[in-house]
Length: 325
Image (cartoon, rainbow, N blue to C red; front, side):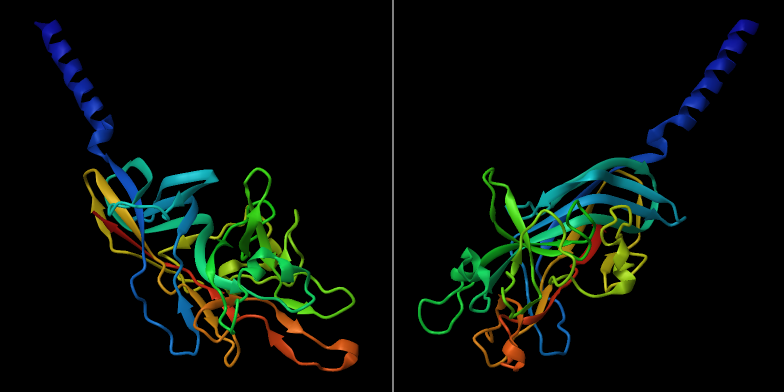
């Protein structure tokens, strides 16, 4: 009889230990999906023009949920960016970004990092006469056959938020072609061209990062940090519901997760490229026209300065909203 009682106690203790260690009692599975939308957003009261991209990609490296006790629970963490393409047909449930077993509880926010956002924008390109790039395909394809209306095509741009090899934080580059292996060629664009003995090209295509004078992303020292760290891959830009630095709009209503749950990250990209039309010129058309500021002062005489395109380029952040489905 003593042996039976002893065995019974051992079984009971073992059952209690197994129950307390059973992950299903304290954990559940979360799927993280994302979808892009372009619903209207409020415009600022200014004279700028805002347009929305068409095709859209995000190179995601990190996503984590923030619990109400302050703990951070990581769902995605990759050294190499995972590129999610929203350009093709995407279901209403969104693209699957990640899936993970996480602790049950109440989550009040999130944080994420991406290397770049890639988007297509209808745009044209123009450069001063004598510029080496006046015969570049992107420029010649933008020239009107007759009249003064510019010809706009879809062109692919990347906006870098974290450093990746020769591309630094704040870089804004355009796809200018493909190499022999059909890999895309990305080029920086020169902000200012001066007339001198040999005029600089507008597109900067090289294996190393240019030193100065490129069109870049929005100016905000608090968001981007020290300019000396733009080339540092270990100094990371993180988007968070806990921080609106840089006019980042990241939202989440608190959600209590007790069972398997799908979270949907909605990325609103409407009106996220802002610029000022060069009023009274061929670029005054509510369309994106890209070119340099041209500082033409031959022989010390002011021959007049102008923009070869619009100006005040300001690619802006999307609005991110996370909800439970």
